[in-house]
Image (cartoon, rainbow, N blue to C red; front, side):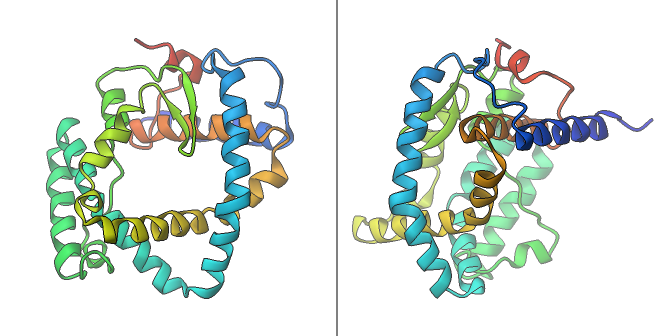
Length: 243
């Protein structure tokens, strides 16, 4: 018998996002999952102001002067550098088949794909996965904990904070020489921001309260990722309270 949770969850997510678009979720009532909202909101405004003043102008220029195939290559390159994090968390989550696929993907793209600039692995059936330490802790039963907005990082949660260190430790980028690392870091940040220009512009038009929009979108996405696209019918605030 087919599992009915997927369609019901998709419908529930659609209703929530529609409510956000219409402003129905944009109330002043504090979410139980966001006890630090009085601190999170000023940090959100700080990040947003910095983004508008610095990152958005650079991202727009970058997208205007950089051909789409080259931007795709840049995205592939940095994803490949950080793919050890995915492989390690496949293993920690007890996913041996994904572990072998992702290990093969890293080898193929690092060699045939010329240091990850190209993605021949996908054509060979080695599709990309997106696993991290926050998801692993969720799979192990850890609740989301409080929602956090971190300076110059953005949406996060108590459960996801350890992944910041995990990503850095397993990203080959951090083992390059300093003379290469800083220029490449700027390229990575600007490239990442250019990929989100359309989404953030649409959000600004749709959302009455962008802070709540971003918070709920982040939390829904993390729940979706932890359950590999088939989350249970669980209220986000109930999930955040799980020990």
